[in-house]
Image (cartoon, one colour):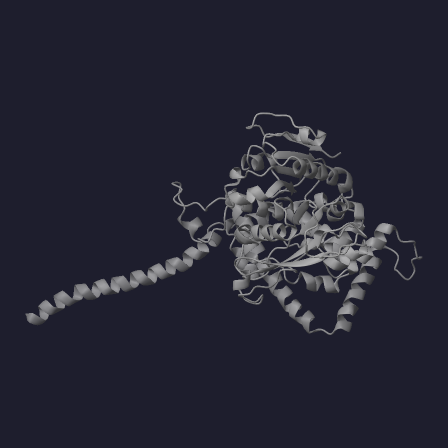
Length: 515
């Protein structure tokens, strides 16, 4: 009887322990499955095929990259010559049978830009002597800054000091560095050079991780921790720390900020979370502004990444994205490389780049790519998926647990709290800009100026930027420099005319520039 009682008392406990163990195993399995649910539950058969193809291509490229790294220089040069011969044979007469033609000035400039190694070489082409500076961010990254303190030929006795000139700070876009501002085939279309000749002290920034900022006092660039950054980190550290450094060196109270693409998003974010930073910028000019793009033109890629932005980590790892781009540049003839970039831009964004000359493409595309973190690209796909300019979403399980009750929402950048005067200059055929949506996310005093027939990169490298973009940038810089206490309800038309007229503060004005 006693044995039977013991069995009765022990069996329920044993059963309970067994159930608990199974529950734990089930929970572990569910957790693993849940991580894949954003991928498994949202993809069509077509997207699965695209996913398999993407993995296959990346694996092939990785193997090819290793092979190229092991090849001696003469063999790499042989591949380069073969790609050049292939290009000429496909485009017409082979180069040996083609009579030597006189190269245009643009062609000569493109050749010099193509062979320039860095920012200093690019500036030397047009006779400018830049300064190099290094900023240590609060979280330990070393950022390269470039400075054009003087006009061409103007002598300075004390580099690294104040010039007494008005200060302008330019910041590049995603997967870029400061070279994109000075790789134009015509000096008059290069905004930094024009600003320097107009008497400005010109500074150009660089994001952490790119060609000029690939160093940290805490982690090396070969570690995953080094690349663990997103737009949040640009906003919390890179932009404000760079601005504080510049103001400290120049002894200026304020500066003007000009951003391109992601360089505008970083400023929107930084100004929204650093109220005191608004007092240090007299005007923010956003070229080809980026805030919350609708998505990509390639439906398969767009759907795939919106379904699960973290797929980027599976494709590219957790360090730098597209790090093999420099390898392709070394073995492919520049005109072919330019064609590949053109096709990629059409596929991803539907940009035709008709406003950029062929020689300008060859010159600029050689300086287009610079290192960026995979996490920062994942951040953009999170923004596209949610249709909001939000901070990075660290909760990868969020898509699984969300319900109609909205129990979870990533923090958004409070961009409507920006006090600094904001001027948008956007192309009306830029697929990344929905101006109506953008204006609802920005403060009421935002001014929007349309550039007819312009796409995204046209605002930077278009053949007519010296007529359609730069003059209006100069007018805004001059106006806000001379009127430091400008009320936020100044109208764009009044700025162009150099006069101030008032309108309702709640009205966001829009004027049209360009032809």
